[in-house]
Image 1: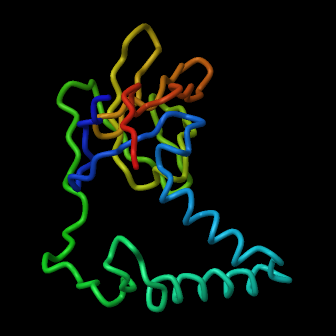
Image 2: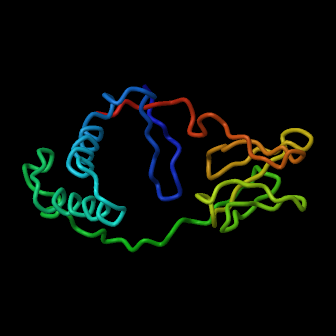
Image 3: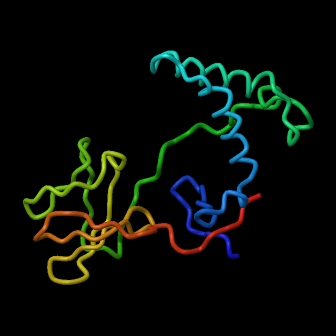
Length: 171
């Protein structure tokens, strides 16, 4: 299969496995199984105790447990902070779109005096908007088409998989 080549603004490419195929990402799935077994059986009495169990797991996983992929060393022995200072995401430009819009803290964009819910996950992000039919606009984040806005209904209709159909088997 072909690797997904589109990247986020930080140069991080998204790699997807086929839906329902956890064996394509076995190491990651195994880590989740271990996390579940060791932190939720039995579960914490309340959310604070549960969070403490997760925090203890992360500390042990990173500082005490040997990892085969790291020559039987825990990650903390090999971790070094990045030498580059994080500068944030670059400004996103949408030259092929009719306009852009900034998503508000409550997850909306304002378009032609209409408030349209996008998602609070996108708060603070700039989206590209391109009219593809009368009153129908495609909504884009970076290189990904997220869905369509119908100005009559004032809703975002998501696209099934905005990251494309390409998948990369992971091992």
